[in-house]
Length: 293
Image (cartoon, rainbow, N blue to C red):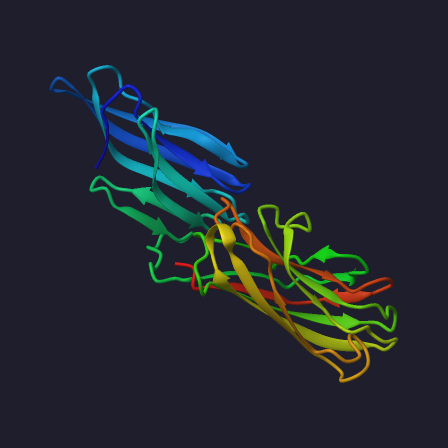
């Protein structure tokens, strides 16, 4: 059970990503032995919002027993991170933090248990430590300037820990145009765009005026976390040996400077810069975030 026993007590919801969240709560009020049922349907929450009231404060002398809370991500495409919070008017304490994939649901039952459900209504495995994103739609021809790679962005379901890994694989086909230096950048932030901060940068040797097909593989791991987090990264390119995408360098390493990895709504993704005149096409993007729980 979850009790609200003063006129300052509330249950709140913070959500850390754009999208659309619906919430319902059912409760029983005890007023000197008189039991009265109640419920609250919260208006749909759109965008990033802090402090939405899921269960309002009881009246003076009333004890409110929260019997059920249902939090549903109704978006068919957007992932959201939700935090259920209990406040006494002064202190805010997180009850649970959960990443809801499209159309997933988080439910608090009458026994005080939180359960995470998939879009199909099945209980989600608590041992699922991997988050995914991908894109199979053609991107380009383009990438002559720094361009965020669709399908690469993943939100951290919880703050990363030492050993949390980000892995990305994407293919590139190149025309004879463009002989600049390819640059792959790992970015962390809340926007999922080139506005996010570059943490690992991989600069390859200049391309040549030849057509080519290749695959980039990015692997990053947290060596430290918290206020002084460090991300260690490696990027490997498989392509023609000396012509096309890159004329010589095929593997790059990068160590980030220190940064705060506890930011709410933090995500990780990649931008790609093929350089001036590049005419690259990306057909497949496959990203995963491992060891997050």
